[in-house]
Image 1 (tube, rainbow, N blue to C red):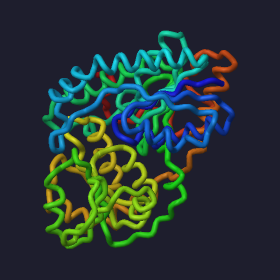
Image 2: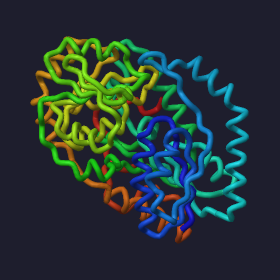
Image 3: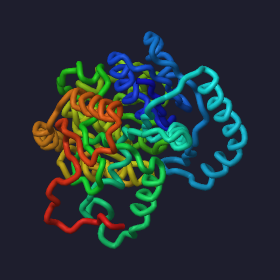
Image 4: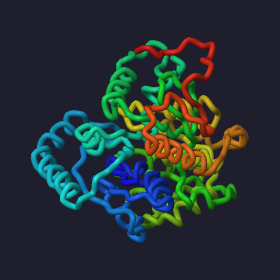
Length: 388
């Protein structure tokens, strides 16, 4: 089948998991045109260069601007408005290239990417949504995990509306997650984390160092504070090399990162889903400091703590970090019960959806292949915010 595959370029998590599914689609004999923005374009171009069934086309995507450890909404809006004209022209050229190449997709898969979804809408094509974001809108969540007592409902409501508007009316929604709340909407199936082969091949061997993933956009006080603690910290994401007291700055290396992750005592990072799900899969406790104004990251962190896999805070609290590092054995014990699996469940679900579409079937309410959760599961007894 000819498939148009859209990948959002903000952050690299979407690209790393899309690579996994794209390699599976190529192995199944499908012809795929990938449209992707940002740094993810270079990553997928390099990773998929050996697959003649796949071509990668760069498009323009929206970007977020960070100030310290928070999203600067006004700066993000200004940046995207300033680049809108150039971006629209670039995407029109990409649209024409797809048509001029004679590529006539029969199906669209979108990892939270709007260009491919709009293409599908204009050409009356079905869309399979594969991402982690849809869990905000399509599942039920306990009130205590959406906001603390006394906090406003606004962040959840805004995030839910944004996610709902991103990929509306899909043929089916496959939602990747390391936590599995009840599904409240039809055509929705939960699947475990989509893991790159390097993680699946890694074996856990706990050491004493702490892996820190910190980007230029993240908390600028983090490293200075961690230097006060009696632990060895290996820091990735800053693009620097060298050592300062108990801190070792590592250059980017996929092999080195996976090695330090699988042997870490614990991880300190933001609230991004991809690294969090990799740590959970490997059984590594994680302390999360989500980026402000990113509800999805905070929801990930709240579930992480709820399940006993780690801890989180909105701001770096040195005493709390030290307590966390002293309690990693308890978190590691909780992680032992996590239902680890490879990507075969995802592949079966995607194959089933493609086969159903090839037969001309209507949008399935639920799928036959095994999953981590689907529409129709018995709701939990606790009151939930599912109608906002």
